[in-house]
Amino acid sequence: MTDDSSRFGFETRAIHAGQEPDPRTGAVIVPIYQTSTYAQDGVGGTREGDYEYSRTANPTRTALEQQLASLEGARHGLAFASGMAASDAVLRTTLRPGDHLVLGNDAYGGTFRLIDKILTGWGVSYTVANLADAGAARAAVRPETKLIWCESPSNPLLGIADIPALAGVAHGAGARLVVDNTFATPYLQTPLALGADIVVHSTTKYLGGHSDVVGGAVLTNEDELREQLFFLRNGAGAVPGAFDAWLTLRGIKTLAVRMERHCENAERIAEALIAHPKVAQVCYPGLPGHPGHEVAVKQMRRFGGMVSFRHAGGEQAALDASARTKLFVLAESLGGIESLIEHPGRMTHASAAGSMLQVPADLVRLSVGIEDARDLVADLLEALG
Ligand SMILES: *Cc1c(COP(=O)(O)O)cnc(C)c1O
Image 1 (cartoon, protein in one colour):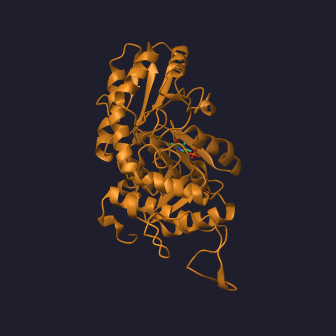
Image 2 (cartoon, helix red, strand yellow):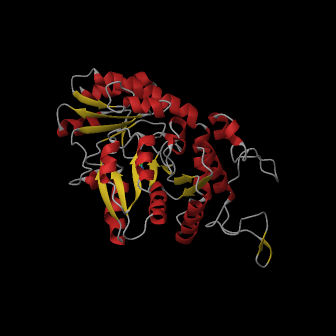
């Protein structure tokens, strides 16, 4: 099931796209092709199509790429060694020295660091804007703008960008729209169908889903861009190993059922928090009071497993609550089956301190896992005291 996979439902594609039984042995599960090189029939001639060296291509990785492309409704998928390697490849293929990009004001801290500390040294400039407001995005665009880089929902404030509206702004300016779809996953939202040009993922998060592998991916419908990304990845070498590709492939098979439970549990937690006297604000796009709720309803299937809240007691109270949970593990990262809690200001987003992306000091971020929701709510209420 590789070519006309779009006629199958999401769950079917997650399990079968790119994953035919092994032609030689009949193995139902794609093997881990733990090999760096491939025998050739003659000098310069390769056997079995395209494989000659695993930096260039590896069959386990190819299966993952076909699975991801099918789920995002993309013509092309490329897997990378990490989400940051995927983002770096997109930035370095779509931008040249002198070009400008517009970045959301609550982008992932690592993305901001890559652009602010590395890309600027390469002659690229950027403007930070509130991308939940398409008018603010339009105002930030310049003649040399080539990219708008957006996350929706965003990390850690769960802001929602109107993807079709942003695509209109980007295309009106002769630029491309990139959506980092890590928080939503293709199960909840498919940005290419909403007008985006490029999707990036940290597959480390919900796609892998079990907190046991680091990886990234880029999806696009543009043939020429795919060639440029492939060339850069082969040239610079940020590829995932076969075992990492296999773990991600396996994780994605259960994405749909995991996401349903993540969403279910997050909704229960958001409801419990909103009623709590020590909680000043709950950031969850599923809540009718969330400023992006209406847009989220239009472009997402459900609202995801990430919930952030502001502690009414300020920074120290937020730090204390983060350290007091017993089931929620105090840790960076997100999207695994186990629940995690963290303080973005001191942890994931510390590198944004002092910038326009600085996050509120009283903010606590939850990655809601798929445990029993009653246990999770009880754990949080006890930690809040
Ligand atoms: C984690 C994350 C990244 C970076 O991915 P890595 O796999 O850690 O390199 C990028 N964007 C978002 C939204 C993330 O959460």
